[in-house]
View 1: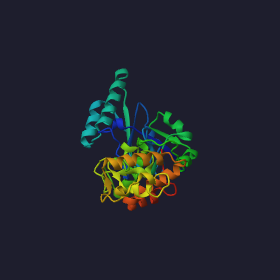
View 2 (view 1 turned 180 degrees about the vertical axis):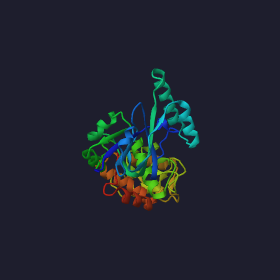
View 3 (view 1 turned 45 degrees about the horizontal axis):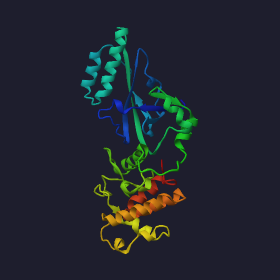
View 4 (view 1 turned 120 degrees about the vertical axis):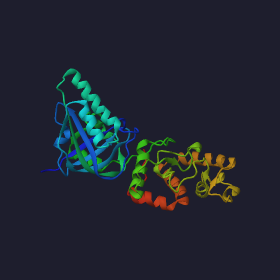
Length: 315
């Protein structure tokens, strides 16, 4: 049987804490349900491929279907509650939504039933989020939670066009946050959300929409969440014609790796303003990458190997 491809839409509204925990999982359970009909998952076969999407992020994972259960039919609310409690499930919002759907359906038709089916997927996080833009933009309008997609769309998903930041912004896009979370989930088996912060601080203009200036703050790269200035900014600014006049000897003589003096902040603001306005965005990225590499070369190496050939992703 020929392999088929599907888009699986997930909503954080049906999760316990309003957050979809994203990680690699073997035999991750998903489910489909339908009032007075057959769940769409009945069409799935082993080895079919799914692309998992969350509206605020984009496509963040792919999965291979391993198996599916028989369809269960719930004819009353007690049957749903019994199934939920007997299996000690913990996604209350989702199960409450099923109870609500059957309750509303039976108001109009007392014989209404809710058909339910679970299926298992070996789930792998993507190296970077694929946003639903361009040739994928129409997928935002798909209402069904599970829908078959063509091989042409699969090719686009597997070969996303690199996006270039035309205008730098201090705001960190959700999709770029997830790219770093996905990276660290793969490398360190992270099972909880990690915060992402600017390395060159946002308060002095450090950009948030290029990966070269972002760090996961719950790891060893933590700068204690202050607005201190990484010394690497001055070490690299001293070598550029445009910025060298703003790097004084006393700043370079500072022993700390992160500077907090007002003089350092004032100088850094001027340097960052110049760097952010380089004619070439590539040159701007290279500067921030060099600053990060001055302090954490092992982290930059991880970014390089994980995002090759185009690790300098921006949104």
